[in-house]
Amino acid sequence: MAQYQYDVGVIGSGPAGLAAAFAAKALGKSVVIIEQYLWGGTCPNYGCDPKKILLSAVEGIRRQSAMQGRGLQGYSKINWSDLMTYKQGYVDAVEPRKVRGLDEAGVTRLYGHSEFINADTMIITDTADTVTATDWVIAVGQRPKKLDFPGSELTQDSEDFLNLPDLPDDVTFIGAGYVGVEFATITNAAGAHTRVVTHGHSALRDFDQTLVKQWITETQEAGFDWYFDATVVKIEQTDTKKLLVSLDDGTQFQTDRVFVTAGRVGNADKLGLETAGITYNEADIPVDDYLRTSNPHVYAIGDVGGSPAPKLVPTGNYEGRYVAQLIVQKITDPIAFPTMPAVVFGSPRIAQTGIPVAAAEQLGYRVTDVDMSQVITFYRYHDNARIRTVLDQNGRVVGASVIAMEAEELINYFVTAINDKRTLADTQANIYAYPSLGSEFGAFY
Ligand SMILES: Cc1cc2nc3c(=O)[nH]c(=O)nc-3n(C[C@H](O)[C@H](O)[C@H](O)COP(=O)(O)OP(=O)(O)OC[C@H]3O[C@@H](n4cnc5c(N)ncnc54)[C@H](O)[C@@H]3O)c2cc1C
Ligand SMILES: NC(=O)c1ccc[n+]([C@@H]2O[C@H](COP(=O)([O-])OP(=O)(O)OC[C@H]3O[C@@H](n4cnc5c(N)ncnc54)[C@H](O)[C@@H]3O)[C@@H](O)[C@H]2O)c1
Image (cartoon, rainbow, N blue to C red; front, side, top):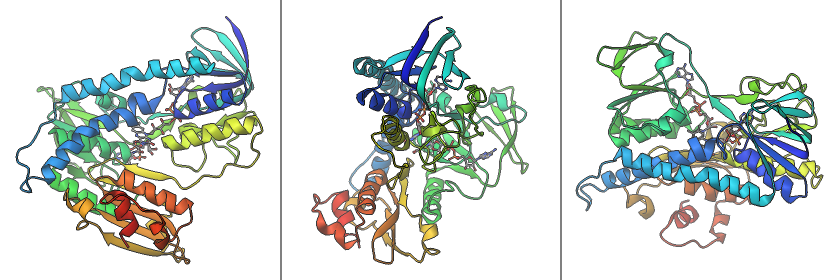
C-alpha cells in the first residue's frame, strides 16, 4: 500500500490525458498518470486509428469501382482476416510506444482503476495504493451506450466490431451516428449485407442534411438497407444460429451480428466523484470556461469534459495542453477554441467546420453551393464532390460543409481560411500544387 504525492495527477491515458501529462511535465511539474485498461485510450486502440486502417481497404474498393468502365477492369475483394491482422499489427505497437514516451518524459505511470477517496486523493482499487495531487485532471473518456430490451445481451459494441475475427454475411447496426455509418461503410464494402436501424428519418443529425441526403442515396445504391424512424425491441437466437431482430414498427429480419452504435456515455460514474464534491451527468462532467469542475482543483477534459467543443481527438489534445498551462499559470485566460473540423469517414466522407449551413440563413449569412464533380481532381475518381460555404456579410469564410472522397483533407483548407478570417478571394493568396485538393480549393468559386 504505497502512498504517492505529485503536483499533477492525470486519470486516463487517452489523447486528452496524455496531452495534459506531457505538457505539465514539460512545464516543470511532477506528474503521475493512472490508466485502468490500454495505454493510449480509445482512439489508437479501439477507436479512430484501427477504424481508419479498416477504411483503407474500403478506399481501395471505392476507387476501383469508380474506375470500372473508365479504364480499370476487375475488382479486388477485401480479405477480412488479413485486414484484421494488419490492423492488429498497428494496435499492438501502440501501448509499448505510449509507455516508452511516458517513461522517457519522466511521467510516473500507475496501472489500475482509480477512485477519489477525498477531494485531493485517489485510491487505485486493485493495489490500495493512494495518490495525492495538488491538481487533478480527469480524462477518463466515454464508453459505448448499452441498450436494454429482451435479447440485448446478444448485441455487441464498437470495440467488439474492431476486433471481429470473421466477416459475417449479414450485419446490423443500431444507430446512424458517426460510429454506425462508418462501420456500415466498412462491412458494406467488405461484402456483408449491411443494415442500419436508427431513430429519426435521417442519419448524422449534426451534419448538413443536404449532403447527408446525397450520401444516403449513394449508400442505398451501394446496397445499405436503411430502417429509419425505428428501433430494435427484441432479439432472439434462432435454431440456425441467426439472430431474429424485431423492430418497433413490426418489421422482422434475420441477421448474424447486431452492433449497438447508439452513442456513448461518460466514465464519470465510476470515479467516486461524490466524495470529491464533483457533479456529473450521464454524458460528462460540467466544467466552467477554465475546464474546472465544481471542485476548482479538479479539471475535466476530453470526451468526459463538459466543454462545448465536439468530443473528438483534437479537442482532447487542445484541452490537455490548455489545462497544463493553466495549472502552471502560464496562461490565465478562459479557454477559447479555434474552429474545429468534424469528419464522418464514410464512402464518400462528409466534413464540416465553423458555422453550419443550417444556421447561416438565420444569421443573415450567404451560402455558396458548388458541384465539384466535373473538376479534374474529383472527376478523375468519379467523385460527386460538393462544397457548401458559409460567408459572412464581409464575404469572409465562416463555415463549410463538404462531401467528397477526401473531404477530411479538403476541410482543413477551410479551417485555415476561417481562422485567418479570409474571404474566398483571399484564398488565392496561396499558390497550391496543381492539380490537387489545394488548387481546387483556391479556385472553386
Ligand atoms: C469507433 C470510434 C471511432 C472514432 N473515430 C474518431 C475519429 O476518426 N476522429 C476523432 O477525432 N475522434 C474519433 N473518435 C473519438 C475519439 O476516440 C475520442 O474523442 C478520444 O479518444 C477521447 O479521448 P479521451 O482522452 O478524452 O478519452 P479516451 O481515449 O476514451 O481515454 C480515456 C482513458 O481513461 C481510462 N479510464 C477510464 N476510467 C478510468 C479510471 N477510473 N481510472 C483509470 N483510468 C480510467 C480508459 O481506460 C481510457 O484509456 C472515435 C471513437 C470511437 C469509439
Ligand atoms: N469520425 C469521427 O470523428 C468519429 C467517429 C466515431 C465516433 N466519434 C465520436 O464518438 C461519438 C459517439 O458516436 P456514435 O455514433 O456512437 O453516437 P452519435 O450520438 O453520433 O449517434 C448515435 C445514433 O444512434 C441513434 N440512436 C440512439 N439510440 C437509439 C436507439 N435506441 N435505436 C435506434 N437508434 C438510436 C441516434 O439517433 C443517432 O443516430 C461521437 O459523438 C463522436 O464524438 C467520432
